[in-house]
Amino acid sequence: MSTNSSPVLVQLPSDEELVLKVIPMPGDCNANGDIFGGWVMAQVDLAGSVVPARYTQGRMATVAVNEFVFKQPVRVGDILSFFSKVSRIGRTSITVKVEVYAERFGSQGQYIKVTEASLTYVAIDDKGQPREIPKRDL
Ligand SMILES: CC(C)(COP(=O)(O)OP(=O)(O)OC[C@H]1O[C@@H](n2cnc3c(N)ncnc32)[C@H](O)[C@@H]1OP(=O)(O)O)[C@@H](O)C(=O)NCCC(=O)NCCS
Image (cartoon, rainbow, N blue to C red):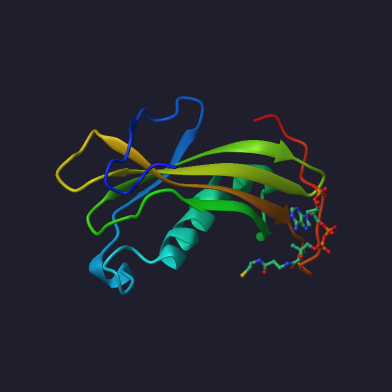
């Protein structure tokens, strides 16, 4: 496990799509002065929904966070880049991988992986029941 003092610089993934960029603000901090994990989770949920929305073509809901790892703290002023790709398409659900990379304030162009997650979204109908994902070439 890497320590917070010497995070490894990494390359951005070439096989995943950039779905969100955001900069956390002081109001998003926890008592340590780092960014609150719940704020990061909310952004990951939003970012993770982008690719599934292309498939579900309508209402959907997050049914599961299968995995969520905070690898490094997120700080105020970091530029966060959220990358995503589909890992499984089921009958009514889609599972995606989301990876979050931070450029520290003043170190643009140098990327640290801060979070990785796997989430599942379900296409739902007007009654909130699962519906089949429409067949479509993307
Ligand atoms: C999403 C919801 C409609 C699914 O209803 P359900 O009765 O569990 O539906 P099913 O058991 O038929 O499962 C539907 C799909 O979800 C998948 N699924 C259900 N539970 C899962 C879990 N814990 N992990 C991963 N996938 C899951 C199933 O595998 C199935 O996918 P598939 O058709 O591609 O194989 C229902 O659970 C719900 O409304 N949950 C609340 C959603 C919500 O409010 N999200 C926001 C949280 S604040």
